[in-house]
Length: 369
RNA sequence: GGACGGUUACCCAAGCGGACAAAGGGGACUGACUGUAAAUCAGUUGGCACAGGCCUUCGUUGGUUCGAAUCCAACACCGUCCA
Image (cartoon, rainbow, N blue to C red; front, side, top):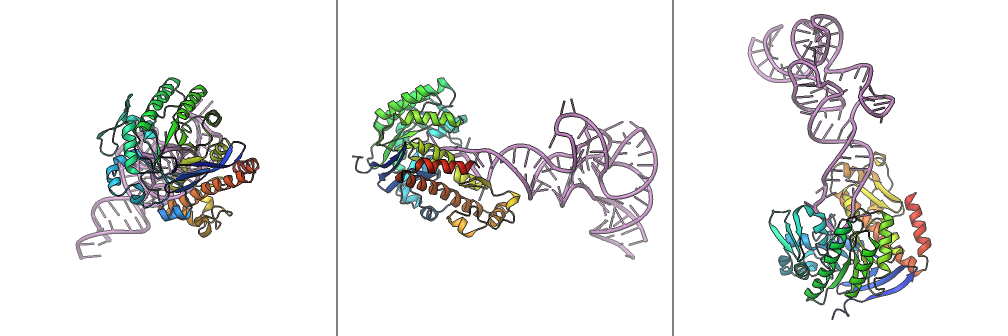
């Protein structure tokens, strides 16, 4: 019985924006939520203590990468992902579907699954829906994802074929699941094509997953296209299940998509930008490497309450970047993740307060200035 | 005092008669990054026009040559060795 473990309660709604709670065996996830990405069972440059202090409620790990190294069987042997990485909060594992798309040079897709070459040692491997689920069961995350195929967003023929295959694979994933303490989410595909998205949302809804995801967005399409797809899909996806927009995004995207009824987000951006010297703030992006900050005594953001902004100046952070010190990536990751988590907390509160529209428009206005 | 070797743009360092405003690093500056093969990648780095265009540079001064960072002479400085 998956029911007792995975209940989504929508506690408040303001327009299409929702505030709720998704209950998992490792804790409740308040929504809307942003999940930092820890592909290799680590949110790059941060300790789990940092994540606790940031009050991260959900983190991601990746099936494809952990299968290749250190191996899902090894992680199972070590007590599962939570114990292995010493994180007792909720974890979501992506199925490896995105890697099929992003590492397309070394893979071959057929009806049954995907054959791909390991980037680590060149050896050949095969993922099928059944294997992806088996690996994810070994890893033991709270939320696991159906094995999907993320297509080129503008290729109609390919998008449709990938979508149909994703549907058949979703059924197989559901059939393959044997653990009841993991919530399996289905994934809607369909590129930038309204009719495909509609078909996909209807099909995935019919499989009655405990949560639903939208995949294949933010991979090169325009913002209006992305927003339109979300609106079409969310009009169909059930209201009593969480909606997860995969791989998004920026503060703008999060506001725009919560507005359209998305509950869960994940993105590499805060940590990747951090390692690449950029700070995400409520006023936009700042490249902390820029010479203008060399003698700037202020924190990244004067209104930010994160550890980094409470203790360090722009000048110091720039110095760390210039010196190639890894602390720069850590301090900026703390700040960037804090920025996004703080944003979703504020959005949630605004929904409870019935102030979502004014909060969102005010926030976006400041962001673009 | 003598014998060699050296002096190239912010730094290191190629170049040894024309295709050299001058390779390659480093540094600096700027930009990109959205289910992470990303502490990565890209561009700029003499000046000015910023499309091929022009001007000033390779220790200094003078010379050879149609033409010099590249050859010659003198000088200056830095190395190593010999007195």
